[in-house]
Each structure stands twice: as structure tokens, then as C-alpha cells.
Image (cartoon, rainbow, N blue to C red; front, side, top):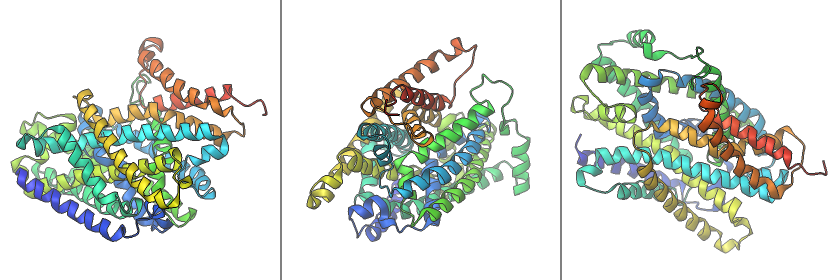
Length: 482
């Protein structure tokens, strides 16, 4: 597929998104930008959240990791499901009862202003890192497929990538994203299914039953790992990590919760969350099946690409055909942008509501300030993504994303758990110290775990350790009034 064809495809795709933003962004009030006027249909939110949850990282990294890690990621996905139930029946009732715009306002009501600021800053760091990881991946692919051919520097690629997001979100915000995410999720799923059937045909698998048997009989389709407790993929570790990753990266994340808070009421938000969590299991199975078929196709046809390069390399081979390559690109762009656009909006929301307290500023200047923050967040993301290019060279990005989440979301997990599970008050002014020390201790524990714990390798459960250390630290700063 020629670079000019790819550019035309991207221009057409973003033309559709900008058209959607034109109709949904006519009301560019702060209420529409932050909460979509609380009129979003729950089923649109649920479907759109699939793309936002998976992102370009899942689209590329999960299939690319199958050769090395088999279907072990599915253990994490099963943990996700139970995490979503906790969100639906523990966290969402709290958020709706308090009628929150930013979920971190809960910490202000529960503990005080320092806890509130600590929680919101933890989110800003976490989501900036997470969004940058996701956009870094798609920018790398676009660089490989298009911009290298025109000798355009990676920095320019990143600027173009962020500018396109800003262009269709700067007016409508979350109201626009509800609809663009729905379209982008549809493109992503179509892309995966089309690619699976092409690969199956190339591997002489001529029916769904043959595809199923091929996957079932492959050594790469092993799901459960119970043999070695020291293995980072050991089932209990992966399951619990998946559960707590969901609770923190969705339930304690302004990005994902902002979509849920656009539903008309709590009941509709819960229907959205439960239906979405069930569908997500099957979608992840599709991605793992795709990864297995990609690996088999690579072995059969002498393709040497591995990890995050596997899917893009095969999808752009001449013998794949323009149609399949086009769907791959649409799927990749849709997956990446469905996550990144909402991240840009939620970062803007959190900074406006939690940090500069926009509602306390003169009413006539609030919209202008919001737009300035939106631009500032865009510039910050460009800087972080370019920095990642210098740091991450040969990695499977999804595993690095979850490692980063373990350190950045841990304090949020500890703070919310302490607030919900206890009635204890804190010496609020010391909370930020605990939130700083816990990730540092977690990093040290992770670095020396193999030596100190007889070969035990800490995996995604670093998030649980970090949250527990935060929780224990908060006990030390209990208020004497208790």
C-alpha cells in the first residue's frame, strides 16, 4: 500500500470525525464538554468504551506478545471482569450520589484539600503517561508506514497526531467523543475480523471450526499458568492484577469514569458497565486469536518481525492486499485515537476542575481558560511522547504500560480504598508524603524481589503492593480525633 494511499485514507477518516464534531460540538459549553449534559445513551457509551479500553496498545501489543506469552493475558482479562463489577456496584453509586464532574472531588469531601489535590495530580501523571504510551505506539507505526518515506522527523509525526485529536475535540469534548468512540470501536472490530479471516484463508483454514481447532491445538493457546508461583504469569498474580488494574485504571480514572458519568442515571451507567465487561472478554479473545494466526503466518512465510512490529509488518505486505491493509490502518488509528482523544479531554477536565478550580473563576472567562488548558495538555503530550522515543526501543508496549500503571495508580488505589473501607479521618496535610513514598518503596521492592524472595518475580501485582503500602501509610497519619 503506497504512502499516498495511506495519507488519503487517513484524511478521509479524520474528515468523518471532524464532521461528527461539527454536529456534536455546536454546544461548546463547559457542561457539554465535561459531562455531555448527562444525556448520553448507555449503549453508545458501552460500545465506545471497548475501543477506549483496548487502545492502539492492545491492537498491536497483545497479538505481538502471543508467541512469547501464549494466551496468558486472558488470565488478566478474567480479572478485569470482576474489577468492572466492583466499579459498577461500589464506585459508581458513590459518584452518582455525589453528582461528581471530577471523581477526585470525593477525596476532598472525605479527607480534605491535600488528599483531593494528591489524587488529582496522581491521575494527571498516570493518564499522561498512559496516553503517551498509547500514542507513542501509533506514532511509531505511522512513522514506519508513511513519514519515513518522506524523511519527516518523528517529532513532526507526533505533532500531527496530537493536532488531529485536538481538532475534533476542542469544542464538543466528551459529547463528541461518545459518538466518535462508537465509530472508532466499530472500525477496530471490523479490522480484526477481516484480518483473522484473511490469515485463516492463507493458512488453509476454511471454516470457523477449522480456525477454532487450529487455535485449540496450538501450544501458543495455553491460557492458565499454575506451575510456578514465581512466574510473572502465575494465574493468581495475573487475575488479581487484572482486577485491580481495572478498579484503578477505569474506576479511579477520570478518563473512563467521565464517560460513565454522562449517562442519565446510575442504573443506566451500571447497565453500560456490566454489558461492556462481558463483551470485552470476547473481544480480547479475538485479539489473542489474531496474534496466534499472525505468528503462524510469519513462521510459514519467513516474516522475521516480532512483538509490536509483527502485526503492522504483515498487514502492510503487498500480498495481503489493499483492502486488508486499509482495514488494518483504520483499525489501528481507530484503536489509538478512541483512547487518546478521551485522555486529552479528561486531562483537560481534571486540570480545570481539580487543579485550577475553574468554577471559581469569572464565568465569562471559563470557556477561554478551558480551551487554553486543552492546548497546554496537547503540548505536554507531544513532549512526553517524543521523550519516550529516546527511552523505549525494543519493548512490548502493553507490558511497559501496566508496569507504569502499577507505580502511578497505586496511591489512588490506596486513597480510595481507605476512604471507602474505613470511617477514619486523616491528617490531610501529610497525605502527599505517603503518596510519594509508597511508589518509591514499591520500585525498590520490585527491583530486589528476585533476590529477597527466593526467585519470586513481581508482575502486574506491583499495583496491589503499591496500593497496600499507601493504605498502610495512611494508617500512620490517622487523625487523633478518631
